[in-house]
Amino acid sequence: MIFLQLFLAHILTDFVFQTSTWVKQKQKKKSKSIFLYIHAFLAGFLSYLLLRDWDQILVPIFISITHFAIDLWKLNQKKDNLKYFLLDQLLHIVMIVLACLYLSSSFDQIGPVFIQLLDSNQFLTIVVAYLLIVFPVGFIIGKATEKWHDEILKNTKEPLSLKAAGRYIGIFERILVLTFILTDNFSAIGFLIAAKSILRFADKNEASARKQTEYVLIGTLMSFSITIIIGLLVRHIAF
Image (cartoon, rainbow, N blue to C red; front, side, top):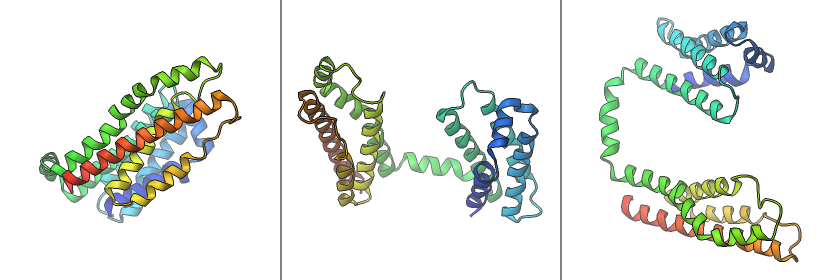
């Protein structure tokens, strides 16, 4: 409940009440922008209102100060891209979690819970499975299909796809497939197969287009097959 209250305050602060004018002036003037201070104050003020614990003033102050520091750090980065946006949001969430632990007096429970997770066969098996499908499996598929990739490149002057698009598509599809298997939603895997079928090439009569289709199909089937096998093994070991 406390986390949801503080997280709602964060969402309202960063995405509802913050206008594009505020953002532009913050990016331009950084620490000299009045909107940076208003924004940080708003984060603490909304947290105070939503918590409704009128005697607890330290948490809103903590939220305001950390929100200011994190935003200022982000504003001083050379690029305003997805990487820094995600890091910014992650840091805000970490501060919210720390505030929740303080309010619930649960700091002493962090160690035992962490140790319990490390001793959990189910937790470790699931973590290993997700790491496998995200990293090594992608490398294996890339190496296994490398000869066909090179063959297609010889016959076309244009790139096969957007830079690294295939790799990210593969990662997301494997994450979804594994999640569906672990949550006993096998039928949902058909949704992914249907989604993959929307891939079309300009002229199916051309040999190069056919080779590209076959290349994508081979990679997809390998990705699905390996992930399904890993998912079934995890269900057998951990469930």
